[in-house]
Image 1 (cartoon, helix red, strand yellow):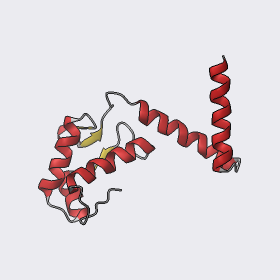
Image 2 (tube, helix red, strand yellow):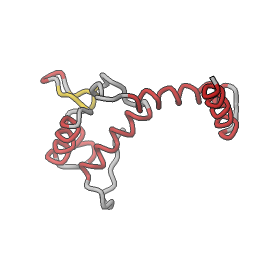
Image 3 (cartoon, helix red, strand yellow):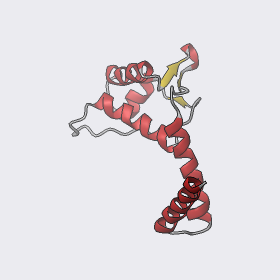
Image 4 (cartoon, one colour):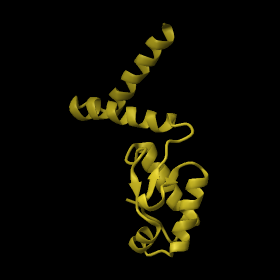
Length: 122
């Protein structure tokens, strides 16, 4: 689920925040999903619990996650979930148009552009 690159110039805690944000934006994580406890994730990734805790504090401060005591840590309802909702809608569109109907990426984009043009025209 989460990966970090120890050789990256981006601090590890920031990489964890980026992983969660990416997974939320792609719809892999949605509001209410539980994420691993600090110690569990630290053990899985071979990191110190302090590093993971720093990432969790950052995400909680930003409203990305919420801790519910002994119940665990969950993806929070964002202050502005437009991007996540848009990403989920785009993924659903692609599942149908590209996946089931076998349109190419170029054809998918052309369909969207035509729909936007029609919408702008009224």
